[in-house]
Length: 462
Image (cartoon, rainbow, N blue to C red; front, side, top):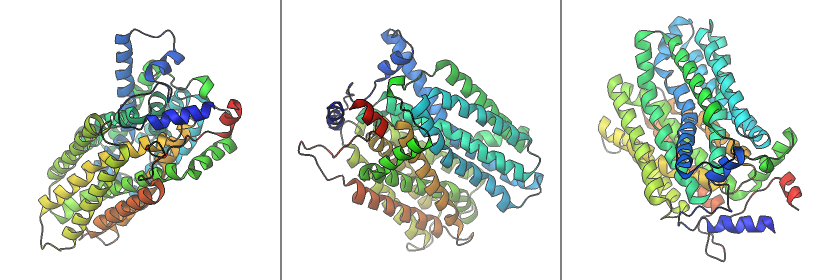
């Protein structure tokens, strides 16, 4: 009976009204009160909420900072360590793979021990790994510790999503994810500029020293200001086998898996843009590095602006599935337009039409990523860490697979980038339609919803 009551509240919370139903999830006030009573006065609660938002935004900004600040230094690393360009590229792949796999470890740990301890441990390892990268004498050691840096940095990604699930539910959760995009979306804009400025006064090792300092500051802020959002009563025991059973139960949920794959393949289209855009904009269309920085920054601004339109205007007025469907449609159309332009269907086109197509594609990501995360995490309350791990790992793994494909046809055409983007978009649409089935309604007219509960929690409640 208790589980049935929670499921009913979950259904009511998707009615698009934007109401945060206290029974459906732990609110921010109650989560903080459970971690550190007594409850602060209303003004203090608002301050704590802002601090939590900024901290979670900082945690989600760690991956783009770790990747994008380092990009301008790649040629210098190749010369300094006497390595081939292909070998130095492995430092990016290693970090990306670490961020994907680390989430599978940290997510279940946070369901068992709470959010703070695994997060702080991960940040401490991130600091150590980044510091070693700064003094690495060989490219092999750099690759190894970039892998460790990614594994540790994954803690911030997965636990930030899990904390949002602890605090919010339904459309309130989707709004919060959009707010996070405002903060974390600034990182891709600033990271290459910051990396370039660091390289003006020091060498590539200075980039890692700056990242080490950022890690130290973020760890201190988390230690002092981030409350525990998972009370002991909502944690569940169990080792590796229990974590695997929980993940298997999540993957057995068709709708959760559908949203996971939809978000993963949409994210892969974004990864194709990130990995190919320097080559496409500068080598094929002859833009200067400064022009590329402007194009990259404008696209990131579009991502942030549309994210705020999603969170402030659309969420609560339009169902999340409808907003997601529009986002997928726009991404698919933009990818198709880029493919036609790249293949010469409209004759010789310059940089401006390509830049417009990339801007539309990247901006529409803000209609997809926050809503796929929210819709998937609505399916689970008791294993938000494991669910967040699956969401993050699938996105990074699919992105890592798609990234090398954009250069498969050499350095003289943007067709591979557009093909990969269109293929990923179409697969995302297929997963959304075949697995999520957004047109299906319950007898009360609401979307089909089921709360995934681990076996040990079920047993405790029966």
